[in-house]
Length: 314
Ligand SMILES: [Zn+2]
Picture 1 (cartoon, rainbow, N blue to C red):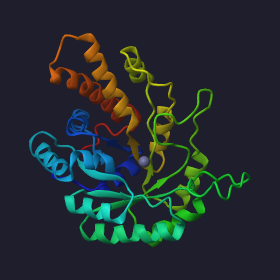
Picture 2: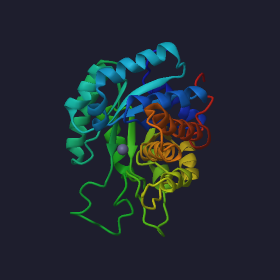
Picture 3: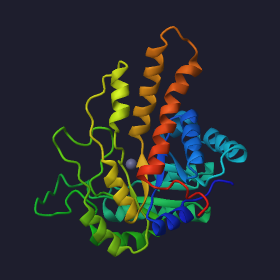
């Protein structure tokens, strides 16, 4: 099957009460490990490429490797997605590379400018059969105008979402309801919280419309411990508890992003291989040590957190 957009994936996930995992990969090997995990679990999957990863890997190489994988061993639906495109030009470039989904992240700008940039990407992408995700968060600008009485101060305001979606004609919307990027989302002692009340208000404004959660790594204890047990010195990190993500997937959240967890699993696996076999200079042995952990992590998320396993042929 050739690459697909996320349109059908999201429709099915919305109805089925599960979510599609969007996994950020930093190199071709990691991309292959994610695809193999999705194939093993018969799950649709999104390969997410950040602008940094795009530079590191090369758009043409990503696209061509995927084409080969999809011809030879991967049968599940796969979408190729640009994560956090900060400029209209970058989004257009990825459409030209053959990505099937792009995210324009103009959330740092004001509402009108965000709409203007998003619209420009939507017009170009839709003309090429590519879908668009955009972000509407209230994080930008809160510093200047903090209103502590406003329960929406750090979150996406439900009153804005309908107008934003209608005027931009986007295909999915990334919302801020308490997730944060990176490994260190919360301080020890702080309780991670997702604002399901705000999520429900947003859903009421946009019935049937797919929502996206960014910054949704959980930093599973097991992988953090392996990384540190084999010589790492990663600080204590608290992510979003997996049961909360499972709940979000039962709501209108159709795409959940994972970046940090892949890195922690990979580096931990590499460290373990190096420590367990200090005499080795077999690069493949070391790399595979990392990749095996990534595949295990992704399979676990698809099955137990996003619940998309087995939905490849819905
Ligand atoms: Zn993100």
